[in-house]
Length: 133
Image: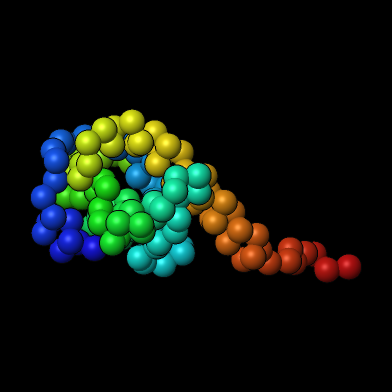
């Protein structure tokens, strides 16, 4: 997906700040669930999310999988600590995607939290007593 976001012209590009909590949720999901991750955005018709280490792309399945919005060029080196926000470039491929972004974030967060909690319960081990009777 990396090459496609550069081949298709964006309507506009902006530099934004991503909350540390959101950034770490996605990084944790990529590390635990594998790379790349692709899942449908429930409630948003024909939209899928593709998460890779260096780019996060929302695509439209109904329009030849063209990108709708993409986050990339994360500036992780400028961070002071783990609670600091991460700056990145946000590319808008359609007009008025700023209206769509809160719904995209809400769906990403709920989907990833559900998938990570499923993975945690599957990996639990029995507790072994240190003092056997």
